[in-house]
Length: 396
Ligand SMILES: Cc1cc2nc3c(=O)[nH]c(=O)nc-3n(C[C@H](O)[C@H](O)[C@H](O)COP(=O)(O)OP(=O)(O)OC[C@H]3O[C@@H](n4cnc5c(N)ncnc54)[C@H](O)[C@@H]3O)c2cc1C
Ligand code: FES
Image (cartoon, rainbow, N blue to C red):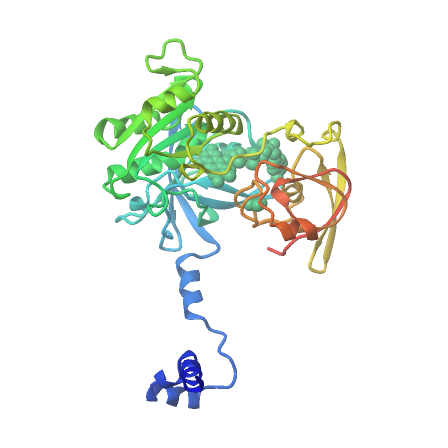
């Protein structure tokens, strides 16, 4: 018995396996730890936390959307997958903002002779950042950002290769990237059917591009479903259970990207169809513009305004905040940098500490850990002030 234990311990230490050369190195090694970590250095080089991207082309993607093409000023575009996003850091007026945009070009286009990536920005109503892109971003401008982020991509170990995309509005962008990648012979045998819901044919983003791929590539099918276009020859109405059943098989993996109302609608349809949860994956679903419509929001508070005392290291600032806007938006308006990515409570990049006061946390994407809830940590992008607050945020 004692012999077995001894040999086992010897094996764990692995001392017998240390070569003579390694013994010599250990003998001569410095007693001071070497702070260099070559793996970390390589990772930082391949995926820098901040890069410069030059706009090299801007084109219309619909009457309400534009595609922006970027090249890397730093020489390379980090490897990404269809469905991931780039996070831009912008200064608009006095506000310091971070905004995610799904990469609408395909990964193979970032590896070609003239590597690039594209985003497609939709502006169907006046909106702060889309307005900025449409009015202020020109060919030759350089923007700051980083990529890739997000987990909304096809994973062969988990997903089947019969993909049914359920898209609404600008939610078409990850699927356009997938369609291009598949048409280029990538994504190992995937077949993609896109059910794309729009109001009128004018609202369809990237329509010509999608129809072209659909006509040329037998593995990509695009079905436009229009809710209010009497002259339309194709599918009408919303993306209902009947339509989903018509274009899917029992082996389909469903991928959703679109607005909250559509998410609720198609989730219900898929549940009624008995689709297992593992076969239904969705991208970030945004909070509604009017947060007071969510269950649990204390009615009457949305009109109020508060003060937030923000502690950052040794700095302490008092800023104004509207009850109807998230704490992250209040920080952005006051030019206090806050690192947001998903902007819906999921990723934790904007994790902050509530020192005093009350907040409403949106139930749509409450990704806080149980211990964080206990200890008063919250995600600034999906928390709304219900009183004056004192918070502590990380220094960016
Ligand atoms: C993962 C992900 C991928 C996305 N991909 C795409 C895409 O491919 N294409 C696309 O078009 N969109 C995409 N979006 C949405 C995009 O990031 C923006 O939210 C959208 O363009 C609207 O921008 P916004 O900042 O104006 O509005 P929001 O971020 O929704 O903010 C809401 C409103 O708050 C006000 N506001 C916010 N901040 C300030 C401020 N600092 N100062 C003054 N007012 C302020 C404005 O009135 C604004 O309209 C994506 C979002 C996510 C989470
Ligand atoms: S940005 Fe993802 S949780 Fe706030």
